[in-house]
Image (cartoon, rainbow, N blue to C red):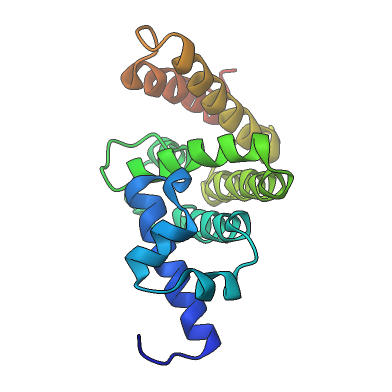
Length: 192
């Protein structure tokens, strides 16, 4: 273990923790697992983070800010495709760990008040990303509030994901994408 400043060491811990969260899921992130993969002592990790929950919260938010960065979205995509991507409807293998991350975070938010606050912030950031995409598009004769539209898209996405848990044979990924695509196109073309 080489000497690093406090800031550099914390960044090292976070980088390894983010890798674990994306590779194996947020719920597999334990101090012991992190210490082993980072080749650090458990005590050193506790020196930088009081609790594993504090670490998970920070890891989740850093990954979410990265995931919601709309500057990374291809400008050549249609407005519908951009919104679908921001909502998590993608067949890209790169995005699947983020879907699991959101699901793990939702579970954590139900058992931890600290994580619940962070999860609420993440949902608000998600809303801002979808709204920015809507605002960036030239929508002629469009009178609906972009805040409301973004919440409707997110609400539909979360609702359909909830239904998948109970009726996975009915709600395939393709069917969910079709439903959300239909709503987006109707909304942006003022047919709803």
